[in-house]
Image (cartoon, rainbow, N blue to C red; front, side):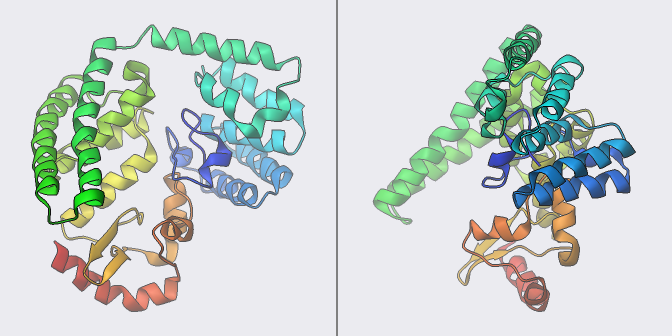
Length: 328
């Protein structure tokens, strides 16, 4: 699935991007079945069948906004503009869609730009964005940006030091120490923010600020991650956090507590090399990932130079469990 607030559906199949709220929040197996079918058909270039699959899902239950956006992309790619505009206008007028940047740069919608309806649509989305920004907590958004800079600076220094000086160098040690210090400082601030505001959503701090909240939490200690996991689950249900980020946090916490991961987001490394950390349910991993807006496990592992074969993985799983235990 795409993340309509951040990325077009076409980007989703080449990068690990996610939805702002889960399509599968509908709780209807039939709805979920057709949404997944639409995702699969779109990924293979079968745009009209994909669009029709979305329509079948919407006949079962009300459309989740990101699914409606994906349907618009599918209809656009199928060169059926009336259906594409139907969904986009619903997003703009009834769902208060605000992501004008994605709307304008999404190549899947490029065929609609010459249509006389496009200008009015873009103007409405831009107005939605302006109205939403007027509700921003600008002071909190600025504070989160400061945390982000503090988080990233030593990590950039670390990567540069590793490349230039090598793993055992003094420069790497200095950057690592700075990273730990900055993470500790950021943890103090993010705990205060979440305890005061809850999990700040895009309406309050923008999508960048919302992403920063997760970034800081995932770089905090296991204790902090565990503490705020229920808060993030609640935020996802309310549309204030991303489902794929939740999948990452769920898996991190599970492995931290010596359990198997659910969504396959965590790649572990030891002297033998990289491997997919132990999975709780290898047979259904793609279905589980799809529910969180994540692409197929094979595509994800390919980016790490790993291959996926479920039968081979299950045979090797006892060994992976031992290797993971040694890392922990």
